[in-house]
Image (cartoon, rainbow, N blue to C red; front, side, top):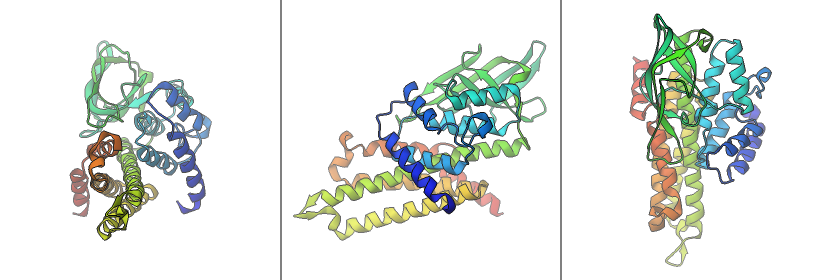
Length: 348
């Protein structure tokens, strides 16, 4: 990543400026992301994208966490684009990919926040193909016009099924969660009719591609958590530098210095693990990054709340927004305990 550090620094600066605006997760905000080129960052250039890699997407994810931005980027860009890039090229897929990158259509991947990554079944009946299944804690499904359902056909092979959000038998129900900056939903398919051109085969080994999609989701959340933690450290250093206690800045006390130093070390380790997973993706690297970074964000945000003193527990401080986001990130796409268990299995 070092050879692209200048590009990443510029991308990070532009993202920070754009996210400093008051975002409310509305269509106008999405248009800003489209015009900035973020939606199609790692989409091939022939589909209207920038032809970059996930490393550039990761920069945006971190800045979204730093700003606790209430956007649909995780589901509408990171996951949807990842899924569309993972399937074989065909006319219907190519058209949807171009429409998503151009911003004319919002799409979302109905991969659940936990459990089986392909929770839908594609069945053949005398009336044609039908999709059944349910996925919970799906990011940004409520605002999507098209949903991509990871399903298994009659032979158990993983496929991706493209359905319209208003298809008969398809229900998208928003789920209330502690973190108000994210929109999660339950997607239920009860005999949704699909045509042959809406069933897409993965490019390469289906199970490997499905695994990579879930790893992409987990790693994106880890990047977001690093941004959350960094924002909390920056805010704490700034606050303790001006807050006076006993006639001197709070930050001048050794205990406070040690606490901030501990936060810095924790974030540095999280960033190293996340960078390692981006450079050399794989089950173990992603699980290490997801487990550590998401727990680190909760720890740092909690410590930031303490170091802000009484005001840290008020709505005015805004610390609670970061703590809630960190808490949801910790459980989304596999808890730290689940990821550590996967790491342990791979050592046997």
